[in-house]
Image (cartoon, rainbow, N blue to C red; front, side, top):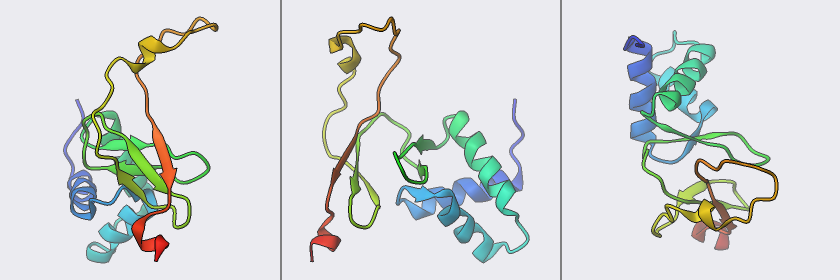
Length: 125
């Protein structure tokens, strides 16, 4: 059982306030802005612990920094190919999508993540 530390609470609060699929650096900047004595290592460690415990969701972004989401339920994302920001996609999560895969390598699938790509409205301007 993990302890609920003040630092952990600050990191969780920052992710919940940002609501933007923030990078670890963005979360750190949000926390250090109000609590200048917190270290980057503490923020990064707590982000990983919070994602492992299911309190936030870690989104692995190919060729970019991982993002942290305050929404923990299964859902899809889209990444802007211009600015790199990540957004939620408004569509139903396909629970058993992995059952449709013809597996030729012997995998036992446990789930899936999909990252769509496109250009966000802001970058289209």
